[in-house]
Amino acid sequence: MLTLAGGVLAAALALTGCAGIPTSGPVGTFTIGDDTSDDRLLTLPDGPQDGQTPAEVLAGFLAAQRAPQNNYSIARLFLSDEFRAEWLPTSSCA
Image 1: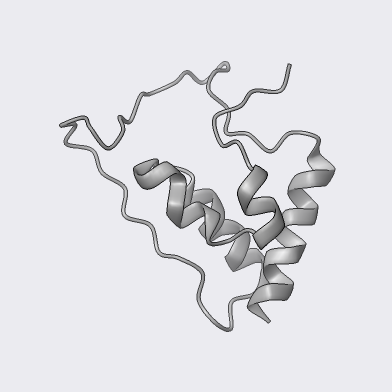
Image 2 (image 1 turned 90 degrees about the horizontal axis):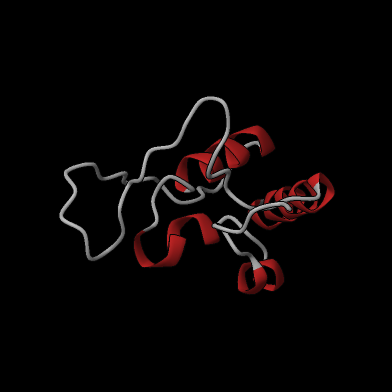
């Protein structure tokens, strides 16, 4: 079930035409730092869990995108093996 949900997530991202995390817009941006910063803000997302619905998988992936530690390693757990290697989380759609 988890691989099916991961496949659904990868397909949904591919169909959107843009699989990057927005870095600007009318709401504004907030830099959350990286592995070398001493920022006090730290997001510790959960990885995918067995038995999650597709909606829960998508919500988990979106939450994990807020954690850049180890090159977004938690968010990458939600992706298929093929897409995991090519996903560029900080790319913009231009």
